[in-house]
Structure formats: C-alpha cells, structure tokens
Image 1 (tube, helix red, strand yellow):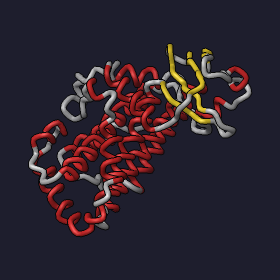
Image 2 (image 1 turned 90 degrees about the vertical axis):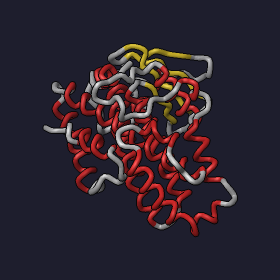
Image 3 (image 1 turned 45 degrees about the vertical axis):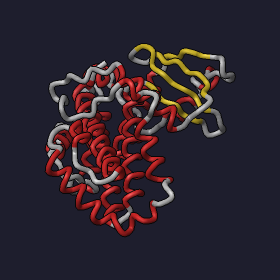
Length: 298
C-alpha cells in the first residue's frame, strides 16, 4: 500500500457530500443486511459506502487542520497542556481520515450499536460486523496496523512524513502522551512556565527540524512536556501533509466526477482562505505544507 494506491481506491466512486457512513448504514438498502450479533459478518457491495468514507475522510482532514490552528490560540493564552491535548486531537482526526481513505471505519448508529466497516475489494465490496468498541484505542490500533504495510518511499513525501515503526502498533504513543499531559496533577504549574516553554519550542524546532521531524529525538529539550508538544506538532503536520498529497491525487483521479472535484476544491480552498490565514507552525515543514495545498487547482 502506498499513497497512490490509497488515492485510487478512494476515488473510484466520487464522494457523497450529503451523507455520512451512519446514514448509509441506516438506509433502506443496507440496514436490513447489517448483522445483529457479534459473531455475524456480512458482505455488501455498496458504492455509497465508499463515497461516504471518502467524504468523511475529507471532513476529518479539515478538522485535524482546524485543531492545528486552534493549538496556536490555546498556547497563546499560556495553556500548554491543553495545547498538547488540542494537538493530540489534530493527530486523532488525521488518523480517522487516513483509516477512512484506506477503507476502514467504525460508525455508531443513532439508535445504538457500533459497526466496523472494512473494504475487502475495490471499488465497493465491504465487510460489516458489529463492534464492541468505538473508541480511541480501536482507532489507533487500526491506524498503526495500516501503516505497518505502508510504502513510505514516495518521491513526493519521503523525508517530510513520520514513518511509523511497526513495534509501536500496540503502544499507541500519541494516546498515552495525551493522557500523561492531560491528567498530570501538577499541570496547574504550567501557567508560570508556559510562555518560556512556548518560546523555547519555537526556537528549538524552528532552528533544528527542517524537512523531517525524525530529528526530534536529538533536540535539546529541557523537560518531557516540551518534547511531547513538539512530537505532537510534527506528527500532526506530517500526517496532514500525507493526507493533502493523497487528496490531491484523489482530486486528479476523479476527473469523471466533476461535482466531487468541485466539492474537494471548494472545501479546502474555503478552509485555507477563511481559517488558515497563516500556516500555524514555524518550521521548514511549512514549505511542504504549502506545496501540498497548492496542488488543488481546478
């Protein structure tokens, strides 16, 4: 699996801007088929599921980007730990987007009951099974499992993205870092130290990690929270660069679906025009981010 194959599989049916995965599951054509017991598994051939997955992936990408913007506002008010939590959710929504592009999601119906959806063959053959969980741990497990078999040697991306080591699959480091930052009993002390922490992060990261976040491990952080915040930021930026590059390829592949292309273009352009007035991080990754955004041209 690589960025091009993900894009091609996700672009086969256009996207469905008027619906969500749970709407498709609740539709008259799918709801009678979905399993009612944990042991059951059914296969459905449903193009609208693929369209909904691609559309939700776009929404979660934009939500991930919005949390990166929100992080700036939070830390400006000297709330470093909540800034870290905001960055965690930027990564989390990016993981949800990538999972959907790869054809996998868990969705909960309005009346209760969570269902795991996985594409088993492109363009639109899916397995649906009832799921016991719909939580962060399940999302990260699926995301790391996806990246285990991902080909990172992409000429347009190599060196600008976080390559996820397979041994981290069961450790879920982002989730654990968020819990450590968010639940630490002494986090109240951040109000007196966060302005200097913010300045140090800007100085350290802006000066040292240029095109790859992999150098983070060798940077001279003074404490664990500095390292965690920098890790969250670089991972969020890297995930978004990868997603933007995939959506740019989807945008190209969807020549037969002009309304879908227009939807992608308008949503990304509207976000960057109205909210992303400046790219909210201070490293040379800004250049790759801007390059990814510039790929969307009608």
